Length: 356
Ligand code: SF4
Image 1 (cartoon, rainbow, N blue to C red):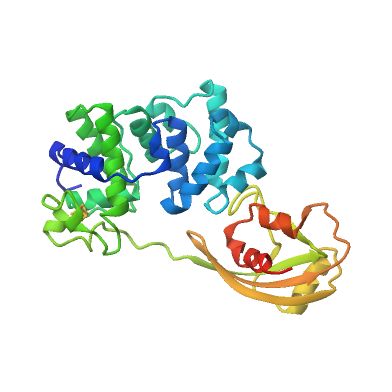
Image 2: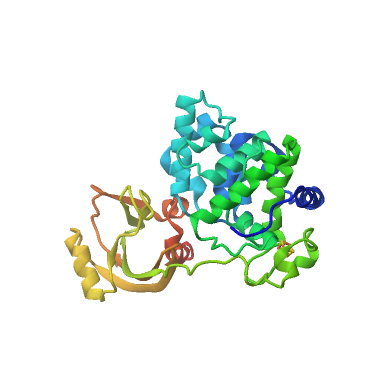
């Protein structure tokens, strides 16, 4: 990496700015490691506004590691509903069980031990170390990479894992050369987060005139804020066509559990078949499941974006009678609206929430 170094003056300047401008967020009312951990996992790939209410409800119901380790899976999924990427919730529970078994229910006060826990990567280990314990450890995610790329004028591709390691090393060297108090480490770490979230924004929206680093930032001085950070081309999303079979018997809906591995693992969904099919083909598919289609009608189309995949969905509502539940789940409309169903099916949940 051929770029400037992160200086103590830059760090002090950011800490001063953070003290004046920090966002008032519920997880910032404490340095408790459990609260820091839950909030950081929720915030991954999810907007702060979407997390606030979910975080508060989650902490009320699962206030500590023991409660998380023993929560029912369905309840956990419900608490996570709307945040997406449900594997994060499952990993939280798995990790809580390991902390109960290996660390007497206490989150370890040590970066390396945190990193050894399931579902905790270098960013989360760094964030918990720094914010909860004041340990000088780097917490580098996409926001921090954008801020550092611009400040230091780095042209390295932030999609390369090597670039993240380089930024982590820059911060490690900074902490090695400049011993900092726990309070300074906390403020610096959260200062990076807030600067990336509210000032040094992506996609041509950097607010350099409000930035404490305006005078020292390489990108700002050289008119490169629209160029940095350098991002390799994102892989194109694969397009997948699906037909949903929304099978109803009276007031009840038939749901099927997805496989325990892969996309939306272990969650309930409306049964689907690959490709778009006609009414007759949909009726045949339902017959093949062992039900006799009585009525069928077309529902609205929808689409859903995953990170690497895009679903285009056609859907039919198919009325049947005498559903048996051997491998499937039969639930009423009220239960349907209260259960954690992946947001990929939001169009249909909204459709039924508006109808008798
Ligand atoms: S001066 Fe502009 S580009 Fe540089 S860190 Fe601040 S907001 Fe980002």
